[in-house]
Amino acid sequence: MENPYLPYPVRIDDITVEAEDKSLKTFKFVFLNKGDEEKYAYRAGQFGELSIPGKGEIPIGIASSPVEKGFVKFTVNRAGVVTTHLHNMKVGDIMGLRGPLGNSYPWDLLKEKNILIVGGGFAFTTLRSSIVYMLDPANRSKFGNIDVVYGARSPGMLLYKDELVQWEKRDDINMHITVDATDDPDWKYNVGFVPPITEQKAPQGGDDTYAIVCGPPIMIKFTQPVLENLGYEHDHIIMSLENRMKCGFGMCGRCGIGKELVCKDGPVFTLDQINKTPREY
Amino acid sequence: MTLVTIDKKDWLKGLTAAAESYRLFGPVKEKDWHQFEELDKGEMPDLNMVNTRLSPKALLFPQSEDMLEYSLDETRDDHHIMKEVRKDYSPRAVVGIRPCDAKATQLIKLNFDAPDIKDPYWLKAYEATTFIGMACDTPLSTCFCTSTGCGPYHEEGLDVLVMEQNDAYLAKILTDKGQVFADASGWATTSDDAATFEAGKKAAEDRIVSKIETDNLADTDLLELHGAPFWDDVAFACINCGTCTFSCPTCWCFDIQDEVNGKSGVRMKNWDSCMFPIFTVHTTGHNPRDTKTQRVRQRFMHKLKYFVDKYHTGIMCVGCGRCVRQCPVNIDIRRVCELMNSFNPTDACASQG
Image (cartoon, rainbow over the protein chains, first blue to last red):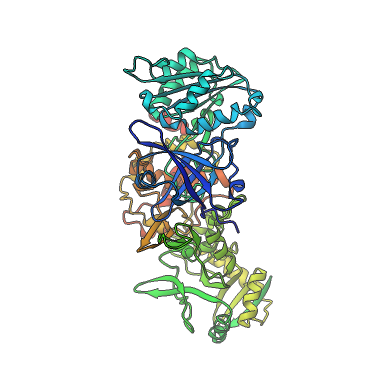
């Protein structure tokens, strides 16, 4: 019998400090055992449980993309016991990884559609996974226009800066990078919060256009009316929820929002689905 | 289905024989209550009780269970690699479980034995266990099993159902597993007295006078029920002690924790409770169920609405009455069920103007 509590052993292969305040690091893991990477086949939008023996586990969205092989990556904000310990670990250290867990963004539904991605802060991880997936030469033709609004507090807090610059240069993705404020005179992108930038830059909604929104609650709160005004129906607004989790596969009971479990029935829901829950997240 | 009769004089002999091939568990008296425990050699289940204080769910779902183990000693090749803890899943039998608690096992099974994912710790223990039920002829005033899809002679989840009949026990063998246990116990004297069983069942059911109504729960809108005006009143006296969830045979929520001793550690599963604020608090401090009203509502909505809507097999309650008897502030699920089942959103809106 498969044991879903048992993590795959992994080694930290690389650590990248992502944010200027060092609160965010990207960990690149490689699997110790041959064959485990194949078992860890995932879709963009799923999450994993980073499992540190002696400390505990933490559910984190997968930041690498299914089209990237040989490793999995997670970008982790230093916040509690497990993530603080993880931030102090070094390349070569051994730990565990469970998953992939949860549903994903609805890639079958999104085929042939225009995609608007709205992200804020360090919630950009599974969105990065999605963008890399869609931009892969084998996949790009399966999607219509791709627009990305991504904002952070300051230029130094933006994740994956090298990739953002590369994507800016491409003509098959429309990047709308923004920061809340900056004193950098050379900053050549937008300045302003995500909701107003979305209002100015995002394409109109419609049957063939879906918005994927991931960010802090305050961003989501003010982005929702903007998207509604742009003509996005609630079943065309896709969001990823977070709740306290333990098992990650629907048994321990704590992440319930009504009869749905965020870990197993989600974390990805349409706003229309979320409206039908008690919204206890 | 076979009916066998066991002379009470042979009861001890039969169970002693069964103990050769089974680990036996049964109710044991401790201070002034009973609880399920593994029986020592020669020890008999104490059937002189109505039911145990805690449900027997811990036999499959221990309050604290080691799942994984690991070494943090970096001189070892396998340091920081987690491994399954070895367990004894040899055949075991629980003797004297009540039909309500056996039915509860089937409800918990929906969670731990889902079509797509299995909890191996629960499921292996379940598969290793033979359930020998004792029919319930002396219910308490807080028992309401007959209106929860269960009953004092309910057979769901049991391999053998035993009823007391003067100087003998009459045992109904319900499954192959039950037959294997009966063979091991030497229970071979067949009986054709099905009528006695039926009469016992009827009489026992008639003794259960406390009832709930659940017929409207499925059709009442989930969000309307969630927003019903009575939740603050229901929760008013609650002290969030968690006694209801720990004593409940159908509550399955758990926590996962690591415990380290020196250089070795274990990852364990511990009972948890939706009554506790830490159950849902985020690392940021934000808590989606921050108030006790929200937590009390979660418990009753889960049992009487979310579960009903998710599995379509009725409510997540077998009417054992433990939470009613043991709640320190007298919150009564029967009363809450009545409020929920009779709730009419239109009336509530009208009364709120």
